[in-house]
Structure formats: structure tokens, C-alpha cells
Amino acid sequence: MSGAATHPRTSQTAITLVLGFGQTVAFASSFYLLGVLGDAIAADLRFSPTVIFSLMSVALAVTPLVATRTARWIEARGGKEVLLASNVIFAAGLILLGLATDGLTLAFAILVLGLGMAIGMYGTPFAILVSLYAEGARRPITGVALLGGLGSTLGWPLSAYLEQHFGWRGACLAWAALHVGICLPLSAWIVPRVVGREHHAKGGAHEPVVWDRRMIQLAVLFACAWFISTAMSSHLPRLLAAFGLTPTKAATVAALVGVASVSVRFAEFTVMRRFSPLIATRVATLMHPLGAACLLALGAKGASLMALGHGAGSGMTTVAKGVLPLHLYGPANYAYRSALLSRPAQLIQIGGPALYGFALAESPRMALALSAGLCLVMFSMTFGLERRLQPQKEEAAA
Image 1 (cartoon, one colour):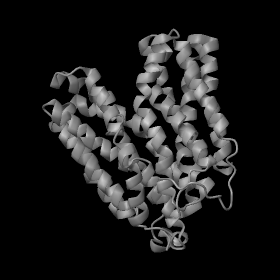
Image 2 (image 1 turned 90 degrees about the vertical axis):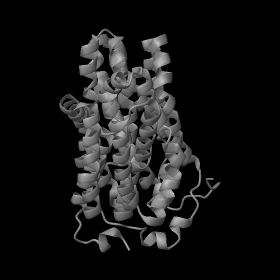
Image 3 (image 1 turned 90 degrees about the horizontal axis):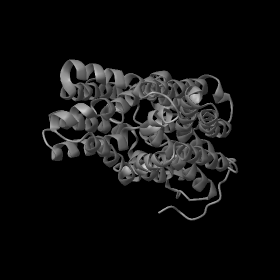
Image 4 (image 1 turned 180 degrees about the vertical axis):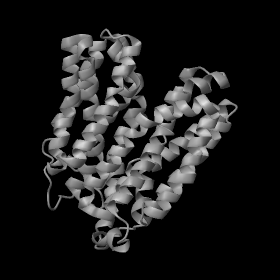
């Protein structure tokens, strides 16, 4: 029985808002947290800032270790339990971080946050929406991604405000309180518990997920996208500065990434949903190269176009990550298939900032060519992905 039938009084809008708000808090209190609090933590605990920021790579390494097991749990028992558990885990990690007095406690706290990120970001709410609405989940998925994109826009200034008034430890504890005091009860109250749908009962959920050609293409597309995304999140201001901007101006211009990302997700939510997600993804892969071309041709005058182009492409590929597997394969095995497709991206993004930093140190133009070239690889991967009514089974995934 579908979630809509089980919970007729729970509106799609309410569910989307609650899941989206949860993603805003999740990203702000983990992925973007050290960008604001990292220097204060390093100074207080007498560590190099490099050590603090490198711990985020350790946190990201947790995801590929648990993603497929989490997906199978979601398919067997529903995503609500996982979502609620992630709020508790996020809160525990933030409390541990706020109480940390040495390197061991600090590292353990970041690992706990990494576990929360692994089970509580995007993949779980997307799977909940697919369980509820099947192929009608595209619009609510876009809505959740739209709100999740506010994690940096709202999270950075809020973390800075909390740190200024309560210290970095108080900021961590405040985010923990938000998880257990607001996100947890809201999700428990609003989000339905759904275990499968009618088509799963017919055996679809037990069929093996196969690595056909389209799966490989999607995995390559998402791996390139996540490499570029993590590389740009660490190095875009430095890249822009290398083309003539002052560091302060480069940081200001780089903030346009968030504006473009949220704007394009809003466009997808309102207008672009009328078009095939394949078309939207194909266009998205060209946004970063167009921005790079402007930066190369115009120098500092093209910096804003570079930031806007990257933000637009990144924003749409995040939506594509949730929508394309649903569009191409349908709702059956959605959570597990998405986890398999994400694994190469999760592994590559761990080393993305370091590899791109090396390229940037060698030559800013070479670094720009690298990221633009990977986008063109992504563009080529969008061809030949037409949906089949009865996908041919090949080798079952391990």
C-alpha cells in the first residue's frame, strides 16, 4: 500500500517542507560547519587548521562504507527510521564536538558526524519520496534539493552568529539542539512510515540491480560531477583569485554559486519539470564549461559568469542525482540502485580537493581545463540513456 493511501491527510507540501528543512539543517551543521568554526576549533585545541579541515575528508569516507547497507535497510523497513536515527546521530556528533578537548575526541566526533551525513543526506529523503509517490516524486525531490541548497546560504551566517555570541562549542550544541528539538519531532510527526509499494509486493524489490551500460554511464556522470563539486567548494575563490581578483573579491564572487544553485533548482521546481530530466541534465553539464570559457576569455571580468555557470550546473546535477535513476529505471530498488551509483562519486570526492589543488598549483588554466573537460565527459554520458520499458538484465551487482 502506498504512503499516500496510508496517510491521506499528510500533504505532499508538508512532507517536502519538513524533509527540505531537515536537509538545510543537516548540511549547515555538518558539511559546511567547519568552514565557519574550523579556525576557532584549531586555535582552541592548538591544532593546525589543515588538520581540522582534513578531518572532513575522513568524515566523507564513512559514506561509501555504509551507503548500500543503509539503502537495503530503507527498502526493507522504510526510510523514516533511518531519517530519525540520523537526527540523533548528528546531535551526538555535534555534542561530542562541542565537548572535545583533545585530538582523539575531535576525530571521533567528526566520524560520528560523517555517519550522520552518510545516512541522513539527500539519499534517504529522496528514497522516502519515491516510496510515497513513485514516479511522481520528481517535483518533491526537487523541492527537497532546493531547500537543502540553503545549507550554506543560511548555515554559514547562522554558524558565524552562534560562534560570535556563544563560542564554537555553544554553536555546536545549538545545532545539536535544533536536530533533536525541531527536526526529530517534525519528522516523527509529519513524515509517514512507508515500507515499499504495491509494485514491490510483486517482486520488484527483490530483483537484482544490474550494472548495464546505462548504470555505468550514470556512475561516470555522477562521479565527475561530485569531483568537480567538492573541488570547487574548496578552491573556487583561489581559482578566481588566480585570474586577477583580490582574495576578498574572489570570496564574494564565489558566493554567487549558491545563488545560482538555488535559482536553477527553483526553475526546475516550477518550469523545467515540464521537460525530460535528461534534457535538463544535458544542459547542466555545459554550464561549468561555459563559465570556464568566459573566465579564460575575459579574465577577472568573467569571474561572476564562472561562478554562476558552476552554480547552475552543480544545482541541476544534484537534482539529477535523485531524479535520473527514477526516470530511467522506475521506483523498484530505487534506494539500493542510487547507493550503487553513488559509490564511485563518494570515493572520488574524498580526494577531489587535494587533486584539484595540485592542478591549480601547477597552472590555473590547467585546473580550469580539467574541470571543464570532466563536464564534457558528463555531457557525453547523457546520450544513450533513453528509458526502456523492460530493461535487459545483465550481470547482477555484487
